[in-house]
Image (cartoon, rainbow, N blue to C red; front, side):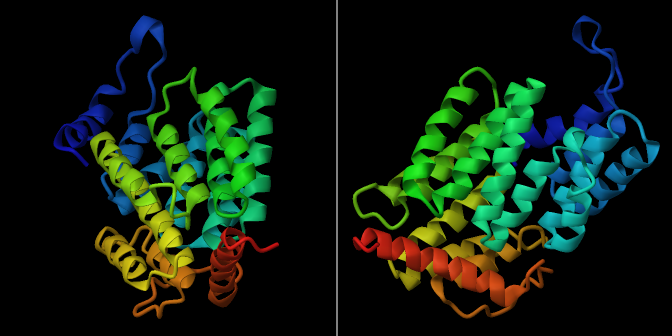
Length: 294
């Protein structure tokens, strides 16, 4: 994270207790602290803070429970993340959190259904930002399975995000576009990824660089380029030494049919063998599609 963003994240909690602009009620300093700790990679401190906010049963408790589900997912504890997600309700954005759990499992049909439900629920509640966020994630999931459908969903995501300022979500749509084009030799995937990596680093949204490398691993696996796939695995491993998202390296190996030298030890809902088979099937299906198969 860039130095100025780190300083802002650290200072923000101390300012959050004050009165907001134009009389906006103050937001819990502890909640902001928990988010800041998560952004800084201090998951234990973030977990403790979010648990305290949840225990308070205040108006921010649903968001804190969502944060706890995200932390469990980041650590690879998917059974806990899923159990927490199912109890979140609309205020905790339950459907989107479930989608975030299912796509790492390679279960893109479940992820897409969850994101669709999240988008539709957000529309019912009139929350444009959440609708755009869920739509972007839907496009990302479909980018691995159905390029034509992903193209349509990306167009809608761009429309929804045009009226809101969600930089990270906009970057997700760019990664989704790379997943849609994975395996193609005429889409400048590697060059676009290099430009996108710079944008991600400038924005300081470090976890998205992991998603970018995972998508590149998919691209190289489809092209059967083991050297480039292995390079993507190495980048992911270098950026997940703290443990969070370490299972992305396992997924990259699954896609390229590489041996997992040292598993991240993720607790998969369906078991590692099923997850490996799903990701490998996504690669082989895309390869067949690009070769003109059914």
